[in-house]
Length: 255
Image (cartoon, rainbow, N blue to C red; front, side):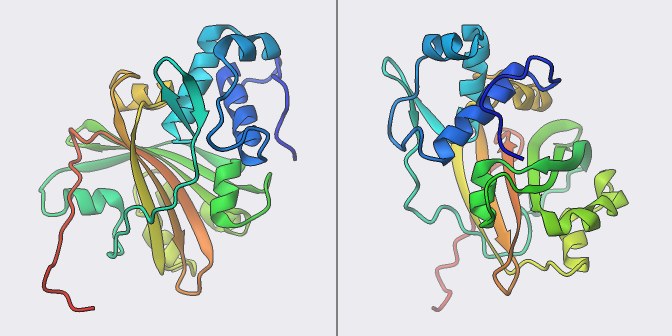
């Protein structure tokens, strides 16, 4: 199932999300090369028959995923591939568990949507599968003491779809996804996590109860088993005013 190359006027998917998917595909296949300037809002509006406001939403969506960078007075540019190693957490716990750590706070999870999907190009690359591969998507909102704190999208490969579809408690927000994956034979062997401050997409900002111009921490994580099989990619947007970023340094550790 190929990514669309034009706006489907009959689809229920918002136009800006459709345009975002088209532009992401162009970034992935090199049609828009890393470091180059994307067409202007006017040019894209003319090409796809969309308003500048809709095009701007699509650009914001790509920026929220760290796929493009907006330079004031110059335009929007395709993000150069990162050459650093990002933030690597050695512990098995996820970001939220690491962040709240010792704090005695109530954490609740709401699953906003879930189901089979065509994985975005950047996710396919992270999972090392072919583009346009089918997989599973789960979108969750996690709150601390009833304050929205973290919006996340988990992507899983096709071979995990049957197992995830049967994780009733996880899909109802009542159980740990990591523990459920461990139970079906996908224990965490390692993960790579990179963090950037971005302007969140409109639906993310709305869920987190912040304005679209309020920066949020965007985390992209890729997890693999002890055997090196990649099985989970997630994009997370965090309100750092609610969940502080904590990093522990042990200077006594021996290499």
